[in-house]
Image (cartoon, rainbow, N blue to C red):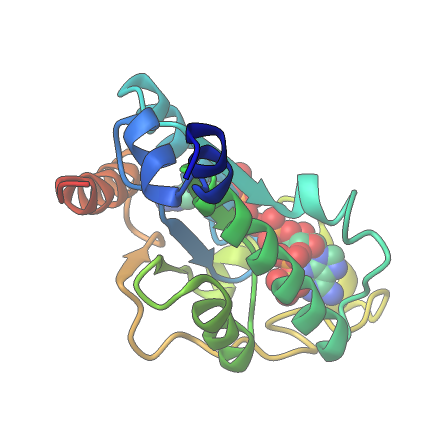
Length: 199
Ligand SMILES: Nc1ncnc2c1ncn2[C@@H]1O[C@H](COP(=O)(O)OS(=O)(=O)O)[C@@H](OP(=O)(O)O)[C@H]1O
Ligand SMILES: Nc1ncnc2c1ncn2[C@@H]1O[C@H](COP(=O)(O)OP(=O)(O)O)[C@@H](O)[C@H]1O
């Protein structure tokens, strides 16, 4: 076989890309109520990983629901499609060797289970940002809880739509009485432990 033919036959693999980055790639899926702290924690964790030379990317409502998924509502079937598409995007990013973080309410267990099927059960770690509804309503960063209580918006998770809490998340972060810094350190320690495994 000529060298050109051999080159054609070979395909760059996920492992090749991970070696290029110098670390494993996998998906960290943050789930929790709106206002629970998913985006805050995911973005601060990404900053700490970046400082350590890890190639990362963070998917959240801002860059997904304003773009590729702007055609989707908050009806159950649209939330399922939202999560399915995000999982497919995350699968490609992981295959590209990028440690990927995703921060989405993702309230339905069935949808979160499908992430594992799409990405691979050993390629995703579920982080449950467990903040009480009371605390989320107290924060009400976007005023959505007030609007939901007033009947101005429908299908609001926690108010007029369910949130199915994880039964066995890989890591649970209770933020009600825990500082952002402590939460970030717990998540970072969890990730660095996973990154210790050799390529
Ligand atoms: N009805 C309703 N229910 C829940 N959340 C709502 C709703 N309408 C708008 N928002 C805002 O959209 C963000 C949630 O989008 P997600 O893509 O994470 O939701 S889901 O995973 O499809 O359930 C969520 O953003 P975060 O606060 O960052 O979670 C909300 O602020
Ligand atoms: N202990 C805490 N952990 C995380 N966020 C907190 C905490 N206390 C207050 N907050 C605030 O709660 C809000 C969480 O908003 P956000 O990160 O957008 O949540 P989500 O992405 O889950 O909707 C932020 O304004 C954050 O500063």
